[in-house]
Every structure is written in structure tokens, then in C-alpha cells.
Image (cartoon, rainbow, N blue to C red; front, top):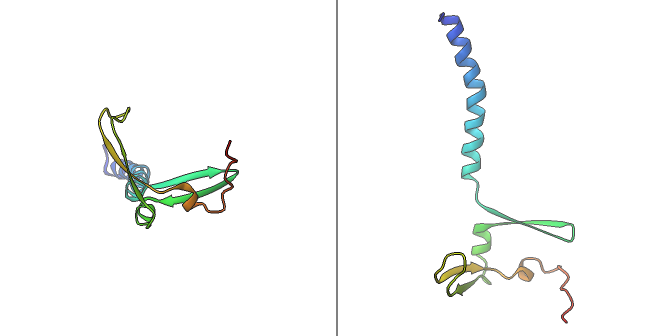
Length: 91
């Protein structure tokens, strides 16, 4: 293979592979975000911001169906994150 042809091949591989690698590395470094859509309105909540809230609570589920053991989770009540959300009528 000639040097010119090898250089062109390397150029094309660089053009194709480098942007893909950049996209993968950027998406891997992004913090998780919870997206909630209710009534045509969408809000985004960053994981770290939710866990730093003063109203975050610990929830323990004994014999969790998915994991088959006791699991502990951290949670924030949705009405506290979305105060202008209309509450459904109670029956």
C-alpha cells in the first residue's frame, strides 16, 4: 500500500472514529438526570441536586420483589419538586 493511500485511509478513519469516541466519552461523563413529563410540561432533575435536598427521605423496602432482599432507597416527594402540580382529587 502506498504512503499516500495509507495517509488517506488514516485520515478517513480519524474523521469517522474520533467524533464517535468524543460523543461516547461526553455521554459517559454526564451526570444522571431524571426527566418527568406531566400534563404536557417536562422538568429535569439532576441526581446530585435531588439527593442534596433537605426533604430527601430514606425508604426501606423489605423483601423487594426485584432484588429478593431488603433494599434501601433515597427519595424526594414529587409534590416538593413540582409545587405547582395539580393534585388529583382524593376519592
